[in-house]
Figure 1: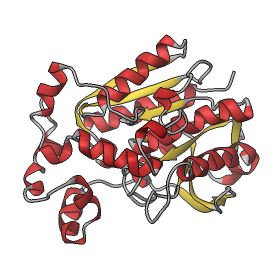
Figure 2: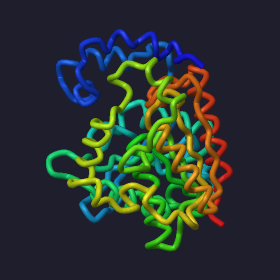
Figure 3: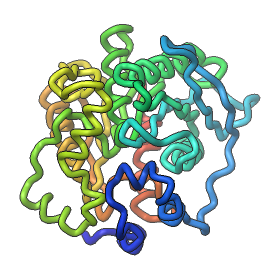
Length: 321
């Protein structure tokens, strides 16, 4: 399918922006970021939001808890999603749409508690395993505080988008190995599972020529992000840093949700194939017409709403065996 007009209509805003990192970080492109993120007709769901923190090995990990049920009505049987935003391990926060809008929508659509995690970014000398440790700590906190959150500890899933999907998968593997308690499910949305992105098929490469170069994540960009995340060459990576390197046997049921116009789809597809080969219950779905980062778009856009409904259904169905 062609690129969705909600995205393609904004391509002209990117003219003159030199790189994805500049778009995310450079103050001179703040107006571009604002215009790209402006969706004045969308009303986010009004749900209960509470700030808290999970204890972690590098200090408290701020979390934001989203709940569409009043505390007195919480049954203790509901599912929970521990959610990580994206941002190439260097950007993003709890206020970005991929964190805040997403969490509000999921709390409403799934009847679930969503714990959005403000993991430490890889800036100013921070590198792996610090963000990974933060996410593991947040997942353990949600499981251990199930009663206070009004959730079933056997229904705690992990999920994330882009870099956040990587962190969610790495944390799911750590919980499997260190605790003997993998999460109920894993939701891996347009994520990066590989330290080096697998080659694109000819068909996929042709699709990517329809997207501005700035949004295509060329190899030098993904390499720079991954090296910065690791704090060293990709040859130092382990399976918790890049889950495609791990022994995937015994991992929890997993939803891999890719975007059609996304270089990282190659990583998601290869990760899904590796999960299936390891005997993991995995479902792979492609959001047609969508680019990387589409969960930053409003839920009034059809493919975004469909993706949210799929994630909500998956979350409701997940339970630890």
